Length: 397
Image 1: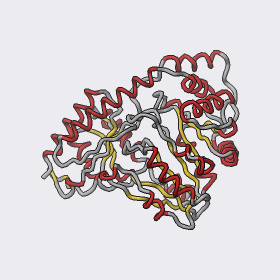
Image 2: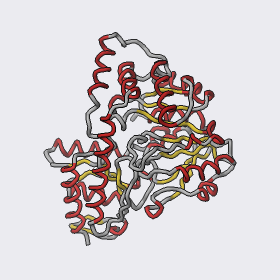
Image 3: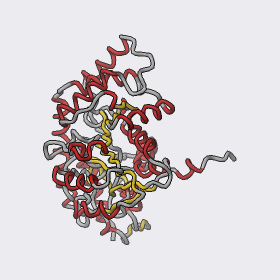
Image 4: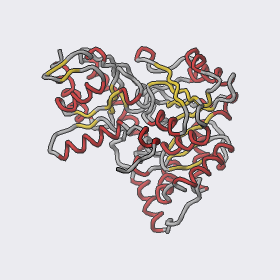
């Protein structure tokens, strides 16, 4: 038997990808599975972006790009930050990577030593904890609940900081909860970080353009902590480009230089063709992105309304992304036809078998009371899925 490394043995498989895999396998068996497990827009990449990729192929963009990304793309990203966020970066403060996930991994791997602590508000995106542990760091979780819209307070943040704290990582709009931090909420957190200049902040803003409350607020806007902030973003969600695998980060030059070095030993540059497509996306003011945002808002309202009518579910109204994160703890201890529900995972598997709807357990995101429902699907599919969920939940007693 081949002996694998402790590193890979201790690494957990992404549960969002696991549920997506199980859904595909059941569909291949002929079952009518509705999958609401993946965080992926159901829209097709806009035509002008696809055309830019075709032109790049015809122009011969077939050689290795610079590790940090093409200069014109990095300049376009700087313009994006200036125009949309009122933040000034130079191209050498930008690293283009193979998706925002790699951007996060780069940032963690170049800043964390074994034994360092990383504060993570829970619920959190599934890969945060695993990437931190891969780097030898220790995640320190701050627990939130549906009553607080899954957001932390300055007091909770201060209480979690120790002499070993090196990093803080969060997302806004948030995956999995859809929660969005306001200007005032971020300002209050920034005042805590200003007292701890040795703590870096990874601000995951990949859902920036799927925001239902107006202007996106970045914690990097506060001058007193600007050099502490590492912004992670990308084109996957806003432009329906998940498969193109282009993310980027913006940070202090010392950090981006380190990320360039790290990326040079792992993947080198992101795909040349995908970068040309990303340049077209970031440089445009395409109304298609507004159309997608409008559709997500409509779906949010539809799903929250339908879920709110199901007895036993506790639902808040998320302000961004495309997820609802209902509290399902009232179903714990109930059963049907031999299926006993003690955890969100039990309920997920029950709904997969009985309702043939694929969801993701909140335990994957550090929450033991909730499920994640992605509403990145057509309206009729969402209505059908929630009708099935409702009927199955009524069987539990």
